[in-house]
Image (cartoon, rainbow, N blue to C red):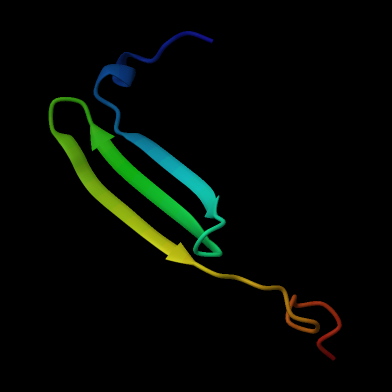
Length: 61
């Protein structure tokens, strides 16, 4: 695969996801950055999730 000439100016997305044992939450961080311009967008957050019986879209009737 050859490198695109646009690779030099194409934005980059970096997504980091981890589980925080102490807080019992998933943590995510997303950064959209462009060469020369720098960071265009940043998001950081935490959430809890659970899979409940009958809530997965299957066997809902």
